[in-house]
Length: 167
Ligand code: GDP
Ligand code: MG
Image (tube, rainbow, N blue to C red; front, side, top):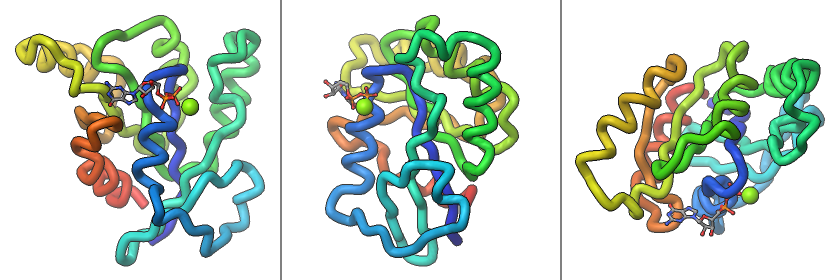
């Protein structure tokens, strides 16, 4: 199995850290799908029969102020159209308007969206996590919700396995 995976989220939630740990030394560009030119291929991770192609998706960078308008949202949605799975990374500490904007961009997308709730190593009150996950689960229908820490490499494997299930 083989497919495209987009990692999206507002700045500073840990996307690069996550990608670096997932790809690590196993980064190898071994195959090319026809649609590859749609996206910038960041790396390919092959585990057994599953090959995940991690891509950068144009229009998904909320750092750009003009991305706020509707037209750009549409463009972002169509840019994501060749993607098989989206990993939406958020910070367990805070849900912000920037997260809302990313969510809005994902709203018309039909492919599975996995919610990666990152930085759980910084949780101060464990009893707050469950209500927070519950709040997030109401934002949209997520394929899976995975609490994780990219920095401490906690739950990266379950995340990769979840990705693999949708390829
Ligand atoms: P990006 O902007 O989404 O690509 O975020 P980065 O990967 O650059 O990370 C932003 C900051 O958050 C950096 O200082 C990272 O070290 C930190 N960070 C990323 N993942 C984690 C995590 O799981 N736990 C903690 N405590 N910090 C993290
Ligand atoms: Mg980054």
